Structure formats: C-alpha cells, structure tokens
Length: 479
Image (cartoon, rainbow, N blue to C red; front, top):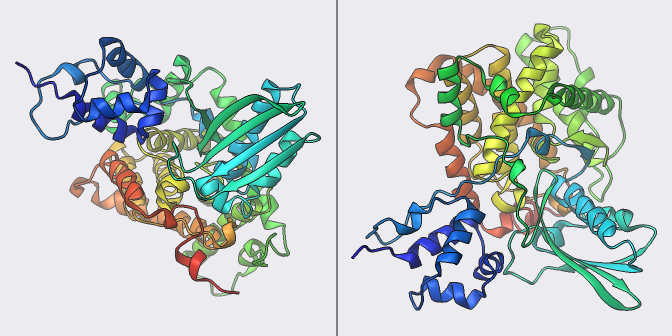
C-alpha cells in the first residue's frame, strides 16, 4: 500500500506558508485541533479538505497522493505573483509596512463600516514594538479622523500569522459591529485573515528567475519585455509616473536642510554631500559622493514622512533612485531606457516578494535593503544591455552579500542605521554589476537559490533583529 504520509505533508505545507495550526485550519474551515490530529496521525483529512488545500495554496494534487517514505515531505508552494504596481507604490514614509499598510487597512475598514461611531486598533508584534517610532499611531489616527479611535500596543501576544498583525474593531452605541484581522506584509501591501487573493492577481505565470530567463531566451526577448507581456497596456504610463516621483524625491531631498523628526536629532546630510566637491576630486570619489547624496536625499525624505516610491519598501526606497538618477546623468540614458530598467528591477523585486519576503519584520533588513540592491543591480545591468546571465549574477551578488543583515532601527525611527544603509547598498549595486561583467561564467549560485537562502536566514533570525528595536544598535545605543 502506498505511503501517503499526510501528517508530514500537511506539516511541511503549513511550515512553508508560515501559518499556525489555528490560521491554517481557519482558512480551511476546520479547527486547529483537527489540524493537530492530521499532523499527529490521529486522523486524516477528508477529500474535500485536501481539495481546499490544493486550491488555497496552489499545491498540485499529486503532492498529497504520491508515495513518499522520507521523514519530511518536500513542498513547493506556488504563491501568486501580482502586478508590479503592487511593488512600486507612491506614498508617504517612513515605513511601508508600518504606515502605508496600516493606513490602507484603516481606510478600507472605515469604508466598510461607515456607520460606526468609534474604532479600536490593536497592534501586535513589530507594529506594537516600533509603531510609535514609525508613526503608525499617527497614520491610524489620521485615517479614522474625525472619528475617535483607541490604539493599543500589544507586545505580549506571540502566536501571530505575521509579525505585522493588527486587529480592527468598529463600534456603534457601545456595541461591536465589525472586526477584521489584517497583516501588513511589506511594501504597503496588506492581507485580510481568511480572505483569498482574487485570481486575476496572479498576472505572472512564471515565478522564478530561472523560468523567466529560459522563457526569454526561447523567445529572444529581454526581461522588461516579459513584463510588458504580463502587464496591461497602461504599464508604461505607470512606470513614467514612478520615475517622475523618484526624481522628485531626489531633488526635493537635495534642497532640504535641518534635522530629521524624532529624538535622535539627526542632521540631514544629502545637500552637504552633494556640494562637497573638491578641486582634485577623482572620478571614483565623485561617483561615491553623488550616488550617496542621492540615496541620502530620498531616504531623508522618507524619514520626514514625505512622498517616495516603495522600491521595494519605504525603508529601502533610496537605493534604486540613487543608482538610476546618477547613471542617467553620467551616461545620458533616455527616459525610455530608464523605464525598461525599472521594469527589470520590479521583476527582480517581485520574485523576492513572491518566493521569500521584502518585510524587515519578517526577515530582517536583508529582505529590504538586500532586495533593493538586487533591483538596482538588475536595472543597471539592463541599461548596459548585459546578458540575462549577467543580470542574474549581478542581482544574486547583491542579495548574497546582504545575507544576515539585521533590522535594528534606533528608537524605531527609520533613520539610524537605515539611511546610511541605502547609500552603501546603492554603491554595492554598482560594484555588483562591475563584478558580474567579468565573472558571470564562473558563478555557482543562482538568484533563485540565494532568494531561498535569504528567506530561511530571515526565519532563523531572532525576533530581536527583525524590526522590533529590541536588539543590535537599538538595544545598545544610549544618548
């Protein structure tokens, strides 16, 4: 008789999705005790439950009915890959997951329960621990204004579907009339507990870079052309606005002076860096200074709560604009060239977001800055008309050498070490492209493998180093 091993397969699937037994069961319409019995071989799931698991989590039916004898089943969960419009978003900083996401959740909840007289929001995990520094409470208050909203910071509850979890309540005449649990999963995107993403969100049939590269080679097209195939006819107009906002963020930041908001009293440095030109300045020094000044400019705008583009997040929003703004001026690339580069960058970011995470609260700063560096590297390699192999290698180098990077913002502010990290990552993106230009034929590690490695590394990081301000610089710094 075939060894179907449902227990290990269900446990592997749930672990791959990062869900608790309660969360996993709720989506299937069963209790957490039922899931526990499945995983402990006390009972087996019904055919209906197996079908639901396949449909909900994009798992082939063969996964459950193949003969396995190994201790732990191997599961490959296929998540939906949505439009790059879900990656590039124009919004106010300082944090896509802590301000943009909660703001979106509150506005949708307010629209759903317009007759409510008051609201309550309970923040958990990273949202609770760094919410004040990230101005999450301010974003919530503004979203529900002029109605009253009570905000609670729950730093104790552990069993959460995501580190950025929030509960929303609506009240009328003292009676609760509405409730939702929301997860802010990074880049300003949110998910609602118990709700599936619409089928049309899965715009990209291929989910890994290896698959996309093979498809592009077969058709003789570039990665940005694959984006054009998958997106709608207005994608060029969208990318044009994204580039316009990126340029505005750089230029506004270069004209801004003074101190950043918050208790650290950090001096804005973008304009100072931009103007510090010396008579005998070498070309390399000039490049370092200008690229860093552009990254500082965008990051400081983000820290001030001004409009930026998530690329892929607010906290890492300075890397891609800095590299592209600099190289456009240096090499006189056209706006159309930049649009193609931005599409290539978005595809890289989308792959990471789909197969791993871009959330600092989930995987540390490697997920944010590492992804931003990979996006900038791929964009620059596209501008240089490098091969698919070179584009992949540049992006792989960028993430590989950010592996293990912690997210430890002092006072929960997206300032130290966040702003300098954007500048360093922008320079590293340029270096990654230069290295890929020479050594692509000798590489051993694929981009898809390093993305998987980043995700597993992030899951292994202590929560103290995942945007909680409980470890690292945030813990040891004293005024």
